[in-house]
Length: 476
Image (cartoon, rainbow, N blue to C red; front, side):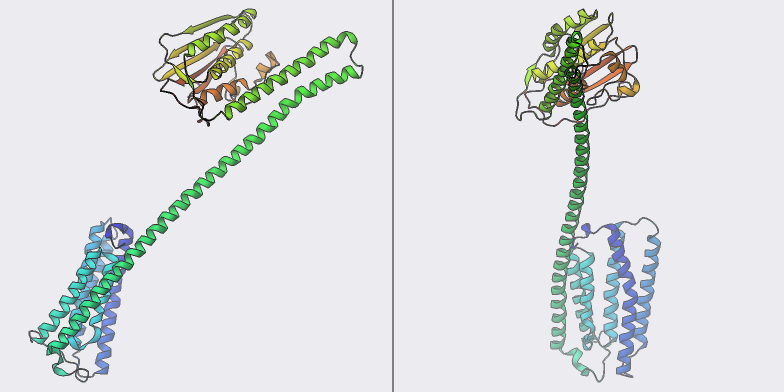
C-alpha cells in the first residue's frame, strides 16, 4: 500500500475522509495544549494569537470538509482525493509550525509532532512522498528557528520554562533541527517499510482467500459431479439388474414348466425355442454392455487410423442388405464424391453404421424404404440414415439416446432389443468430437444423423467424452 496505485479508490476516499475528520481533533488538541501552557505559565503566553491560529485552521478544515462532502455526492477521481489529502497534510504541517511559534519556538518540546504527519503521509502516498513531508517538516522547523534567532519574526519566550536567549544559541538550533530531521526521516523510512510489508501481506491474504474460494468452488463442483455420477451409476445398476434378471427369470419359468410336467411333450420344442431366444437376448445385452464398457475405458495412447468412412459404410451395407431385401425394403446408399477422411477406430465406425442401419431396417414395415447418405460439410462428414418406419413421438424423441430406453411403439413392433444400440452410437460419435441427433414423426419414419470432424492429423482416442452438442428445436 505504499504505492498509491495499489490503494482502491474507495479505500483512498475513506482515508481522506478520516484525515479531514482528524483535523477537528488536531484543533482540539492544540487548544488543550495552549490552555494548559497558559495555566502552567500564567501571563507568559499570549493566548489570543494561538487561539487565532486555531480558529484559522478550523475555518480551513471546515472548507475542505464542505468540499469533500459535496464531492462525495458525485463520482470523484482518485487524483482529486489525493489532492485534498496533500492539501490537508500541508495545512496541518503549516498549522503546527504556527502553533510552535506561539508556544515558544525552540523552547517547546511539541516539535516532535511533525513526525505524526510524516507517518500519516506513509499510509496515503507513495514512498517518495513521505520523505518529501519529512523534508518539509525539517525545513519549516529550521526556518522557524532561524527566523526567530535572527529576529525576523518575534520570539515568544516561555519565561520560567526556558532561558530567554536560548532560542538564539546556534548549538540549540542545530541540535533541535538535527533531532527533528533524523527522527522524521527515520520514521518515514520505517513507516513506509511497515506499510509496504502490511500491504504485501494483505495482498497475499487476498490472493490466498481468492484461491481458497476458487478451490472451494471447485470442490463444490466436483462434489456435485460425484453425486451425479453416483446417482447415474446407481440408476445404471438398477437398469442393468432389471434387464439381466428378466431373461433369466423367463428361462427359469420355461424350464420349471417343463420339469414340473405342465408342458406336453409336443410343446417342448416351442418352449425350448422361447428359452433359447431369451438366452440370446441376454447374450446380446451382455455383449452390448461389454462394448459400452470398452468405450468408457479405452486403452490409453491408442493411435486412431485414417479412414474413408464411405468404405466402412459400403462394407456394412453389404452385410445388412440381405436383411432389408428379405423384409421387402427398398435399400439405397448414396455417397458424395471427394469426402474428407476421418480419424477413428475401424471397429467403432462399423459398429456406428451397423447400429443405425439395423435399427432403421428393424423398425420399418415391409414395403418401406431405408436410405443411407454420406456427404461432407464445411468441417467434416455427415452421415444420415432415413427410413419410412413407425417413427418416434416427440416425448420419446428426447430419450432415444438414453441407455435401455425403448419407445412403446418400438416394443410393440419388435419385442427383442437391448435399448443400448443408440446409446452406443452416441458414445462412439462423442468419443471423436462429433455429435448425433434425430428427427422423426410418428407414422412417417425417422432420420438419424451424425457429424464427425474431418481428419486433422494423427491423434489419440479421447478417454472422456465431451457433452453431446444438442441440436436445435428442429433436431430436438
